[in-house]
Length: 331
Image (tube, rainbow, N blue to C red; front, side, top):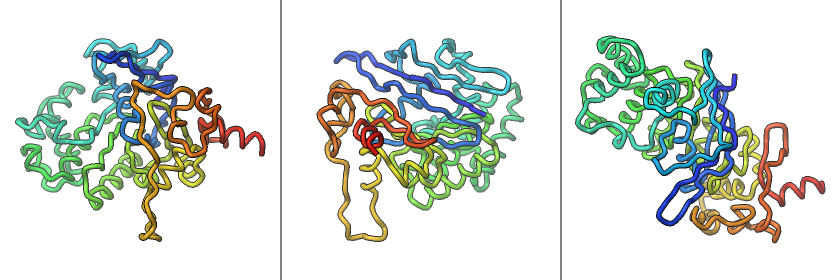
């Protein structure tokens, strides 16, 4: 079952320097029980895309008329971008859609206990009493692996370790039984052992609740362990999309190839790291043609003039690269 459909999402911001395009023609789908990995460098538009799904971008955000985000639930279909009031937006802000943010300390109110915050959101989204909300919250804290959950319920965020705060954030996001979970770099600030525990936890949650997950990260190693499909973003555009096996093993776009080549090789610890050359351009100075051509090692003159379309290279593997498309046609 297709849970979320994003079609031609284009998002711009009005700034003092002018109008900039942060997301440009992005399209993808997420099914129930599926993990979609959204990868790319900082500034590629991953988090802005995710926030669009909950209409959390600031007031200067402009969605173009052709942009469409559709959430398909069992009893209704929600046109997300048509939601205007705070009440109507509850379905995508903690109801059917929940989000885990990168830094829990910035998400939990420091002067309110973890439990009070969990209860408040449950009472807001469900017709239950505070006593029932507390029981659900303690149970969810326990299910995500927090020891002595009843005690942690009454503690503040600063009293918990980094890994425990992240688990508490996951518990809070899951307590409303969302259909879609957005995880915005949930493992970035954690050490590797806690990272592994959080990744295993999210796999278990997908299996148990049959929810869809959008996992945002710049770490392809994490994506390889968690995702079913992966979308590679660069400067607001998806430039490669497919099953995680296809994209990791046979990357087509030079940018994806560069990201994979930049991963340290455990079988050759003396090998030099191979970074992607150059820096991601400012959205105020978007390159013409293919947005990656200014850093691309195989760019040709046409790449600076023509915007590449997404081309199917396999049944479930597409990429936007003029050079790769031409080579495929010639083969």
